[in-house]
Image (cartoon, rainbow, N blue to C red; front, side, top):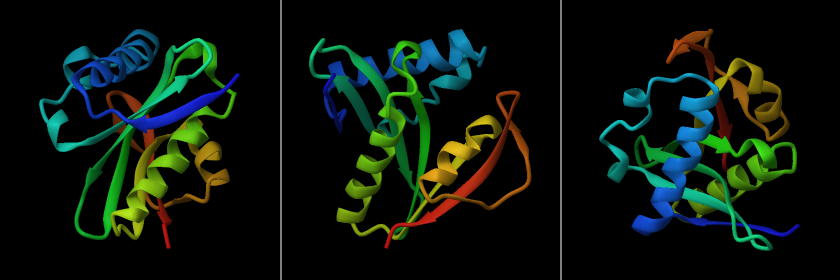
Length: 146
């Protein structure tokens, strides 16, 4: 199986991002649908992963610019049938490289507690106590992109 990640910079690709997020967060994790789409979507940089063999869109993530140094990665989601195949890491790696080319120095994210080991393997360090987001326990994590 071959996969690729790209910026979701068209309305059609953005629609696939929303579908994956709805599938993962709303259907699987019971996040209220009104919390999933914030109305600020046009302020974020969206990315999508595709299985280049089947042409299926299988994962998504986005980042928000915090300031001229920091991005905040959000809404990392991989379709259930494609988990544990490196898609999440591929998305994070691509976003980090994309952000580096734009001059960003730090990446931060709010990880669901059960996903912390995944992000630690990618070099992220816990930087907060546990807090609830949409009823799910999270902790903020950070990584130096330099």
